[in-house]
Image (cartoon, rainbow, N blue to C red; front, side, top):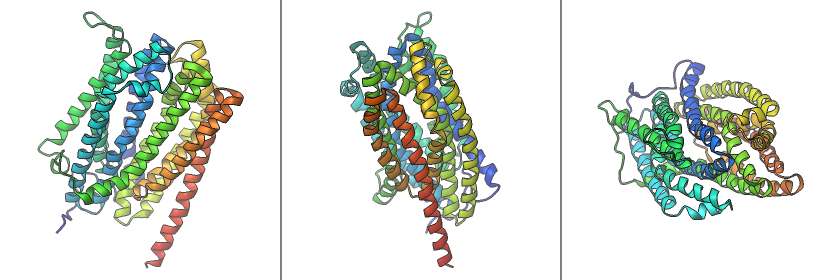
Length: 459
């Protein structure tokens, strides 16, 4: 027989209580975690920018790869969020614990595989961007250090997903905040040196990130292995069972594929940008993308919370609660998107100059932010709607939309780039973001009507 007891105090039941309060209680720490992850990169760029735009280009090229690694880590993270959330909603804590063990095993295997590969073979990736020899050499050194942290990143994201699926987004926030504070302290020390500590340049930034992420992982493991650990102190490494593994892959692979392909497309866009704009083109896209992460990560935080909220309520037969949460989230994201649009369109150069003070760099970056500013509302609409799809366990539709329109970006960027230069690449990104937002919302609206009709027919 299954374990049908109610969720313990270690998890949070999202099927009861005030919708807006529960949604924001879950979303705010998630949003903060997203900002923390963004802040890791922005803090690095803030200090590395003092070394010059060439150093920023070297780090930015590796940042694209880390984006792709983060995408593959979503297999276990999203699989944990949805499977554990639905198991708790169905009052099956035994099943939730088994899913946690499986997602952790997947994270360990994938993280180790990618980490070893890029440590041993960094040159093929770096050569893709056709950077100047000195910049490429710095990028290789940076990648070798960062690659040692890839297994750590996979596990940190997996453990975050386990807590989020359990309705506990607070602890991942505290742990990631601790890592960020440590990174802030270590960055200037290791980049520029002080006392007996030698100046290591961008290698110091990579080492600071590696140490900080290692501390975050230690905090997760320590908390999970306590006597009152989450989900009964589940086993980290097990022999996978077919049933659980297939379910996790079905949930996580579409999201991971969507994000990995998105990262791959952006890598190619960065290459097109380097053809038309040199290293300033790469600097504009990578650094501008991190700044744009203010809206991206806020939307992702609320989307993830919405997905967990929907997963529990859908499994409990309370879909109306999920629909109300969706409306609340759309209103919040609409307000934030409007503010971001105004800031990027009218003050893009001033914002960019905070991170890279070179005049040519911040003027080029300002153009990027201005053009992307026009699509912020639509980008946030796409991400928010994705949360509803994920909570219902239907992760394929957003993946299809993302893959199709991200693919279109490459020929569109090449076409516009040949006619109006590097800004054509930015317009290709902005235009396709508008289409993704509109089509995602329309697709979900059609799905929602079908769900209502099926509910009526079952009465």
